[in-house]
Length: 255
Image (cartoon, rainbow, N blue to C red; front, side):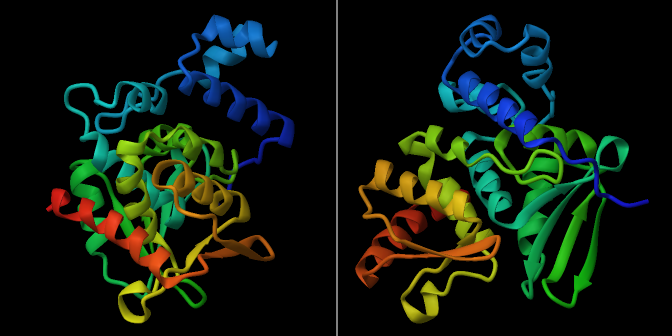
């Protein structure tokens, strides 16, 4: 059975993104329905909680800065959201849903941590090797996929939601960006060459530019598009070093 599900129409994707963005600003469901002129039924359906054991709803976590008891720490959640924004994609629908994580030619150390911190015991993962993308991990857990969708993780059905990056507070920017760089495939080259190369879609990289500017006053870099993918580079090595030092300052807290 194919994992690819039915794509939503662009209008439906835009509606879902608008509802989730309003919820992250603290609007209640009735307020969203009135201000955005959406049916309350539609709003409630979009905002229905996924009830995952380790992942919070973004509207709750980004405003409270603290997860509910039992869920992963806020910094860990934002790290993995960043990682999967760069390297993940949700495929399928219903019981066939899976999150596919592209690892390139790297070992599975990241996936081991992901399984420990987010998925918990009893969740299956499988590996396959693509001639174009290298190793990919398939995590077949519908409840996890449903919990990741409000975080804007790319999916066949909903696309991506770069607007979520505009709502990440300054104190959670480092874990998100650290996760993005760790999931950034092909990997960023800073440790070897002293330069960072960000990979992603043009919309997500534009949101990364805004996040760096808003939280760390980093001048916006140059985005070069090549079809559906793009690269983001900053003009000066010192800017890359500044970003790298801010991100690595967060790393010891994860050990």
